[in-house]
Image 1 (cartoon, rainbow, N blue to C red):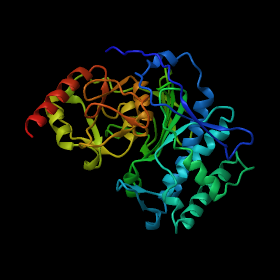
Image 2: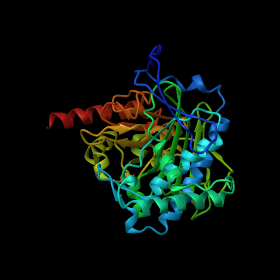
Image 3: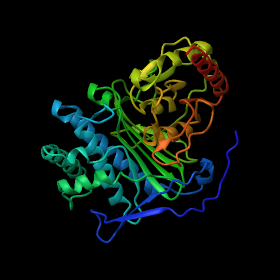
Image 4: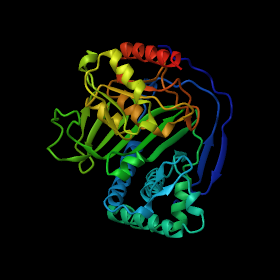
Length: 396
């Protein structure tokens, strides 16, 4: 599979705003819509992202702590309604504010650009003051419990500004953090799987990813168990840097183990993941593909990018995502999971076998859907996908 390189000659549009958390340290937000093919990950393998990784792990871990606290005592008033009908929680806003704040505090000398899911529009409406105050209290409580930022007590205005730092458009120039503060909000509300998904783009390429999965067991969810943990332990943090592999540890520990995708090469022995919500993916198409491959196991349906984490350690072999017509994939729904699987030896492409391109802004322009598996099974999976899509189209 060849990857084309192009030269970038357009100048990025730069918007400067004052950093509300750091004195004399401006925030620069880059927005550039120049089209560019993704660079090969190995081009960045010699670069060091140690500081960025440490900051990302800390931010995601603290956000996970906030989400765990809220999930234990969810109130109906925590749930608001977005225009796309998916729920937004107090934890969603709080997670984004916390990650935004921590990254800026931990990396004060770097230009800060964040592409994130939420903005404060609903929080600025009449009657939302109580929600703002609850979010602010949550964020301050988590910061105080960590002890690293004892000099800071954030106001509601600080928190709203931190949330709105996520309005960057991303693009192919410079560095951009990419965040889904709670990926899998419906799973979160049900008490099931969700993830705090944070990635770093460098010149349009994902070079770092962290997935905090508070409800994912450390043992395999495939049913066969795992040597990684004791029975009953839950809460995983996966992290990857380009060229450095993928590692996992408990949210309560820093002792990491390296993980690898499954080496299964017989489709009949493969299990596959798909979205829990039928609205998120065409289950009938996934079923057709599995049948063509000869997969015997029923699908494992779980929410969020926790699927990417589970697949990276070999809990399953295939992940299929085929959104309904008209849906546009957002980069924050896949960036962190993409590098976590890729660095664990897996392959992530669109339905035509093209690599995912995160350099075009807030959305992924791709063919039909996203497929994930190991290198051995990808050729036969692509064939089954192509045939199933053609049959579905011809039947319409």
